[in-house]
Structure formats: structure tokens, C-alpha cells
Image (cartoon, rainbow, N blue to C red; front, side):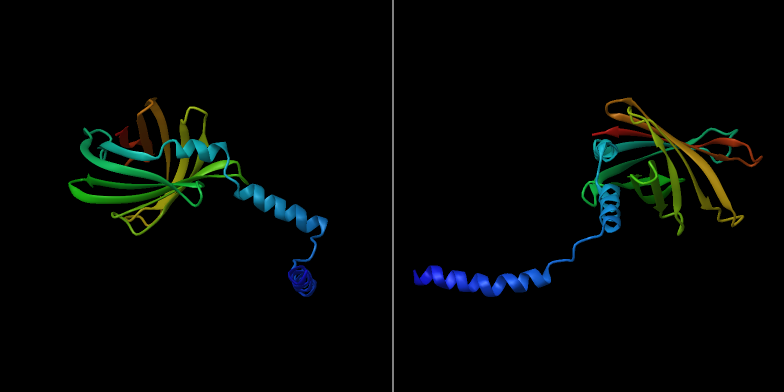
Length: 195
């Protein structure tokens, strides 16, 4: 009996204090805003699709400096993993590029608000950032457009990138940009083979 009375007294003194600390009730407008933010931040099927590509890959890299010359061929590795509660796919590349050690870092996500995929890329050959946006289909084939600032001209350069899976374990990335004559040409091809 004494124990029950003590618990009742403790609750009687604690509950009013808790009620004072409770957040105020939201207006309909505030509730709609809260719902919009929750929907914007909730991972969906597009994020689950990105997560399926997580893993370690061997890379075969072809680069074209001159569109009329044969490409250089080099190798590397890529490690992909999901971050931010399975909202964003990160990729770290370790390779050789034009005979030099090369490290790159990319992020890819899907924006619930815009309904588009986005990508960022930076690497050890630059101090800048490439930002891209695009679409992907249910088979994981994607088409992006992006831009960066050219070190020589200092001007913004645009390029388009495509990816597609040739098998459940092989993905091909291709990058196209302006050549010396200003016309689009293939700049790079990277073949990812999952280990």
C-alpha cells in the first residue's frame, strides 16, 4: 500500500512537468511541412536499387585524349557502399590514370523531391567538383549530364555519362565530352567487374 501511494505521488508530481515539456501541437500547415520533409528523407525503391550495386569491383579503364588516336588502357579497383541510412551510394576508386596513381571519390543518390538521380565526383587530378544529374531505368541503365571547370580554359565544360549492366556482375560506364573541334567524342570507358 505504501509503495502504491509512493508511485502515485511520484506520477502526480512528474506528469504535469512532462506535459509542460511536450512539444506544442502543430498547425495543419506545420503538419503538412513535417510530412513533406519526412517523405523527402525516406529511402525508397530507387535507393534500394543503388544499394544493390554496393561491393568491390575490378576496373578496366580506357581513356581518349585524342579522339583519332587509340585509347590508353589501365586498371584499378572500386569500392562502393551505402551511407546516411542507405540514402547515398559512395564510391572510392584506386587506379592508374595516364601513368599516374589516381584516387577518386563519388557519391550517387536519388532526390525524392526532384525525382532525379544526382552524382558528385572529385579526384586526385583536380581540386574541383563535378556535379551531375540524370535518370535511371529499372534495369539500372542511367544517363547523366554534368559539368566541371576546365583547368586550361577556366570555363565550364559539360559532358554526358551513361552506365548500363551487360550482366549481373558487369557494369559499363561511358563518358562523352567536347573534343578539340568542339564536337562530342568518347573520353572514357570504365568496365566494372564485381568480385
